[in-house]
Length: 308
Image 1 (cartoon, rainbow, N blue to C red):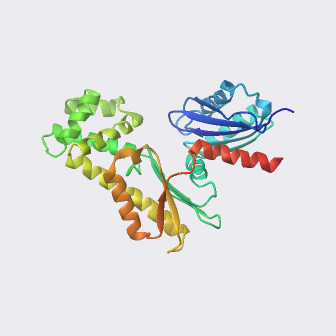
Image 2 (cartoon, rainbow, N blue to C red; image 1 turned 45 degrees about the horizontal axis):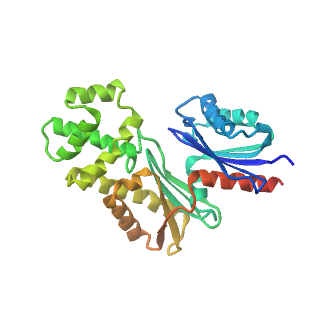
Image 3 (cartoon, rainbow, N blue to C red; image 1 turned 180 degrees about the vertical axis):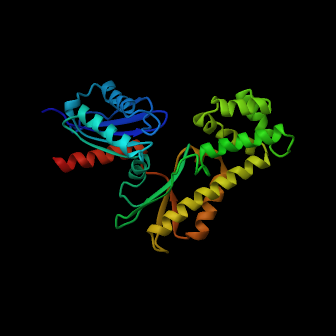
């Protein structure tokens, strides 16, 4: 009997990760990675090509794929999402192809039973929750031009602000700026302005500066420490708003933290947890049960099972 494959994918701004499982239970789980898959920042054809590469690398014939679930960055770009879905469906004609937001598959991984709130803090930030009767809510996620508090981009942007203050002789963030200079080689206000507005410090480059804030805070930089505390409070407000819209207090609510910014240090996490618990006393902060790509695969397997 020809094996039928369920494929889950997590498509982000830098890479796409895939997990594939066959209906033949003796077949091992297969994993692969390919290039970026942000459908708002790249052409749908290029994003779809990277998704297909993940399957090609694993030597799975397209006709043997029964379900594809992919969470993508840039999901809100409706026309691009529609085209991206069409391209995948054409490549996997026998499959049910479902495209979700990256936060939806992250939620599926964090809470396999479907109930709880996730707070994602990476390059961007968003909170997403589902309550016991299936109602959902999203808070934040407007993108870096509007909504950069509690994000890698937001922290990186404040590194640039601190560098500008130091170059202007305003005290308070000398250690953070010294780390910035060591990383980038930017030593003057003229160099800083040229890098920002000349394009060499693009969105991804700015977000990559976020770990400098943690390093400076650990070294006693008061400005860096204040940035982490502010980020923690901003992320708590995302969670608070999501919880209040979905759950009745004192109903117990599980909250999972997802994303690289949560590794920023004690100050950020401490402020997040204390702020959240002051307004939502029944909250339990938990670790995600599964990764986002595992959440996508779980959805794909459920889709495939429903068709059998």
